Length: 443
Ligand code: MEV
Image 1 (cartoon, rainbow, N blue to C red):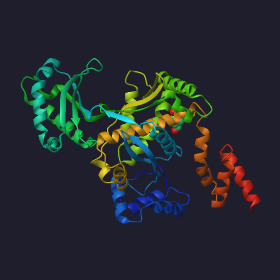
Image 2: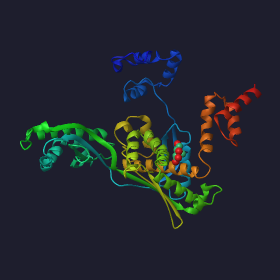
Image 3: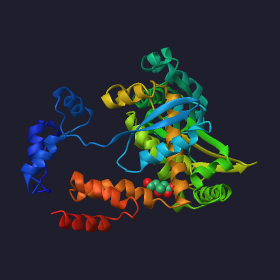
Image 4: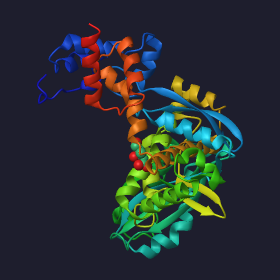
């Protein structure tokens, strides 16, 4: 297909037409069609469900769904579902979970469950009148959104606070109506955005109809109404603790005390150097995103919140920290996290539902604790490997299977390769060389 040809109304075409158009871009459309078809679900009802999740769905894109067993979080045992394409992530989380299992596991705490959102607007009138009338406006905002909030209030949530924020020091005329929302066990994005869009209408009506505003709504330019993904009133902490001596189990040839010190210094480095901090936090999100995806939650929102939190003091830093005191090693992770266990994809995607059931149908706080613990487990595994034998040996062992697939290895070749590389360094060309030799000798 000529990629420069504009396609009007693509979304309105039926799936077969969309697929035909897409296939025109391939050198071998028959082969491409076979791939597309093979990834569609054989049950039309399941496929229909997936088709409707997103616009212009042609087929599905599989990612591995794995589990990390033996996670103890707040004295409760979990088998944690993880969706990730990175070969070592589940193994690393499971290794950490196994290590902490006999040391009290992960202990978590959620401070609050308040999300927030803003109506962003420019006000070119008298700021004082805006501030003076705000208590009245606030009543209107609460009253005018009762039809949207009634259900949430019945479930124990709703709007927790509304304030006027003067941002004029940062930008000329910039004000916000900023509100807090308790969305109970839902992530609450639709609820929050519906309230905020209604706030904007109410604000315009208020300013436009009250004679204290001399120019009516002419001084008001509403820019946008949207939730914030920086959910800094929705924090979760996960902590693990053990005696330094117990670290010997993973310290290998190194004395446990030396391991603990190196580990702590690695953590400090991620606190002062942004290049290290980004990679350090990526290792945390290896675990976090995998569980967020498995449970049908929004990993972009969770990532955005985490990275904004990491930069909250004006410099991007590690999300986790470590201490060694009186012979005790402690590692902890705190980050904001907006996830739900009801609503959205959690109730629609069969695999998300299955994941939540596997976790015992937790409420949102419990899920936050599990997810943060998966993040901390990944971080612990990554830094432990980095300060001892490095990550490549383990990583490449896990990656061996991908390399063997790349070269189309048969079951027999695969078995021989796994045995051969159990004592050797895995690498792309080393595997290729092994297979070439093996194929010559076993022809
Ligand atoms: C790789 O996916 C993650 C790590 O780079 C994390 C880290 O460096 O801490 C190993």
